[in-house]
Amino acid sequence: MNPTIDAKIKAKGYERVSGMAILNDVAVTETHREILSAKLTTPKAVEVFNKECEDLWVLYRKNKLTTQITFSEFNLVRNARGKDAARFDIVDDEGESYWLWMSKADIKRNIQIFPECKAELQKGLNHYA
Image 1 (cartoon, helix red, strand yellow):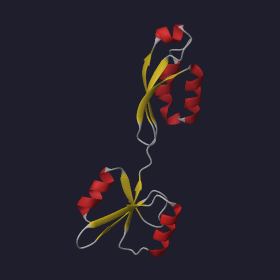
Image 2: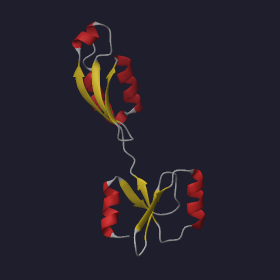
Image 3: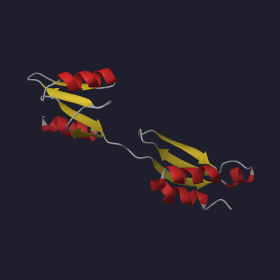
Image 4: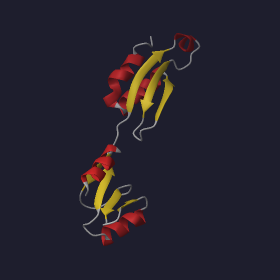
């Protein structure tokens, strides 16, 4: 594979893999005229690729992103009204970015679900009495 093409694909969050294709892999090959690529988005596409494609194709797989949670603020007015008062910025495992308010119970649940984000979640939890 052309090193420039390889670098461009890796810059998009994909890594080169070997072996059998799985759902959502990207298959890439070079011809003397162009670069061909296909995202394997259906089980049938994966099956056909694994049965019929030659070694001239290179497989790339999206790096698994992890959810990132960052404590943003604690709103005393919302808390006084009995509303969720801890605000967090979220980047989910698909790369989507948003923010949301969490209650004390929400934060405790998310510490269990996302132990890698415990330090940031704990910042919000510390504000609840």
